[in-house]
Length: 122
Length: 234
Image 1: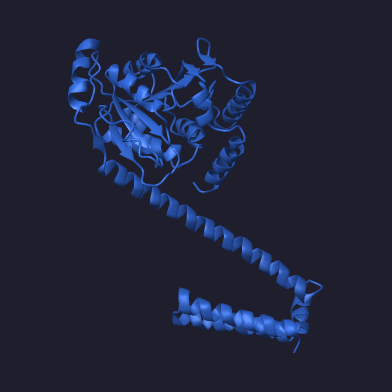
Image 2 (image 1 turned 90 degrees about the vertical axis):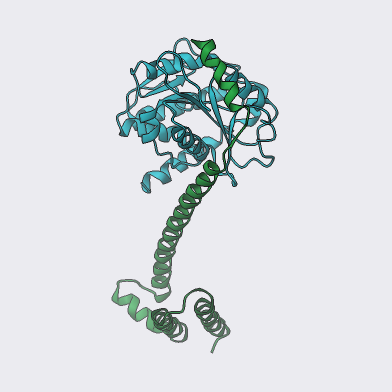
């Protein structure tokens, strides 16, 4: 085994463990995680087979196919993330607005200061 | 609690979005109060709460606990004024650029039911932009050309914070652009909802303070980007 393979195997395993430990760990998450991890390990340990898959799809090299798929996933992930951030910001705005209106400070001087002018302007 | 205009009893509210304003905001607010207007200041999370600077004035003081942006502050102030029963709402800058003497001309078209929205214009005949720099004028003119093209509205000034809204128009506006792109968004809403609008010449005076407080010209790119992003998320 080459050093880079060991590095990638440990890295992907750590990712899955962290994800399941800290983010989500339903049965489905574990199954999908394990599936993705086995695909990753397979491509890391037997890289020549990714080229077979790549050739089937019309790509010359396995590494290139992985790069394309990675790029696509990254853009999707960014879009989903941006949508979430936007939603959060809308919710935060609504919350802060409601607080601001609820806690409005009306100076006691407000009433007398306004009344005389209605006369002045007429 | 609120002002009555003599002519038809319509309640006029002035909405001032404010962020980290200095002492001068007090003068702006006192001038408006002296003319009998009901004033709501929305402090957009200033590091020193503006309620300190406004102590003793008859202003309605609201505060965002977090800085959200001028568009959000405007929407908050408008929502509050509507809750208080406002019939006409005037949006007014906190930095002293705007003249309270322009308000009657601005509200007249609303009170006479000639328009739902009256937009202040410094570039219309009779309007003035005092001490404006050449580069600022150029960027503003570009923004006008761009907005005319995207909204199809024949406007002469697109980024002027001085405008008057009828209760109906104020209630139908949904400013979701928290940042500075709200000015364009308001015009887009006017176009989309087919609100009747008119332009009124006003005077904008660029004091040293207002220039320091105001937008940098490079921010035009951010505004464009915010409008662009919003377009895809409607």
